[in-house]
Amino acid sequence: MMPPRPVPKTPYRSVFISDTHLGTRGCRAEFLAGFLKSMTCENLYLVGDIIDGWRLKRSWFWDRYHDKVLRRVLKFARTGTNVVYVPGNHDEMLRKYLALGIEICGVKIQMEAEHITADGKRLLITHGDLFDSVVRHARLLAVLGDGAYTAALVVNRWFNLIRARLGYPYWSLSAWLKLQVKEAVKAIDRFETALADDAKARGFDGVVCGHIHHAEMRMVNGVLYMNDGDWVESCTALVEHLDGRMELIDWVALNKLSMLGKPAPRMSAAQSKALPAVAAEIAAMQRNLDPARAVSAGA
Image (cartoon, rainbow, N blue to C red; front, side):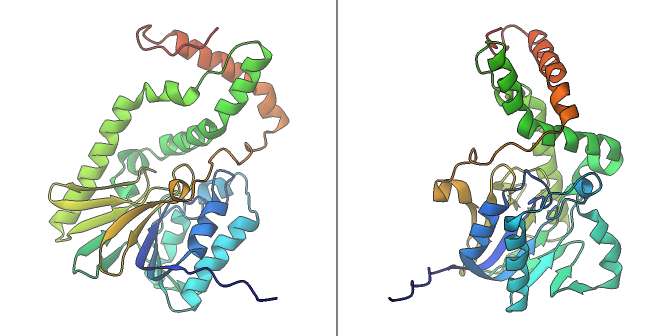
């Protein structure tokens, strides 16, 4: 019997990923491991929030897919790929080692990096949290926001289980959250402008970042702004082709994967008991919305 032929790997000059949040149940490590296996690259930039140190302080989750991601990153470094790790706010514990100029298993750790594309563009690579006023000046609010974001990933499923038991139809928490999107859009725009203006002032042609989990590639004030997204919700990466062309890769859409295939994180007994109160509070918030903007909850 003939051995199976190896699947050809897509060659890239450079790959940029961020906000994988390894160590959390929300991390789509199975998709990330698949992406890393599918390609080769000369440069691999880990643009912050790769390991979720904030979550490590409270709890920890690690499965075989997390192992695969770690092993594949280390294999890149071992086989000649230039691997650079730019810590973010969730893995800021690594920043205290920056002054030492150390490498971990061939992975360079830098506060920021500079990359020259094949067609000569000079790019600044930074996680981006230093341009987020909430993270910089109100750490407690940032931590609370992180907790709220994590809860939002799972509470909709549990909330609707309760509604179903009470005889109410499905109600989308995410749709309700989109009603509040106006201020979020303004914040993203301010973030992008601040990063682009800083890169421009320092003589860069473009900037690569993460942090806000919003994949984007566009010109901002004469600078190419590129955010590589995340591996929690969107599962996106930024790649540089061999000729210097930049592209955002949507791994889920490209491979027709389902984001719904992963079970909801386990909840403790105490959290389960608290769910009715959470459901009541969300319902109360919905009732207080402007009737013209309210989403029908069927209650």
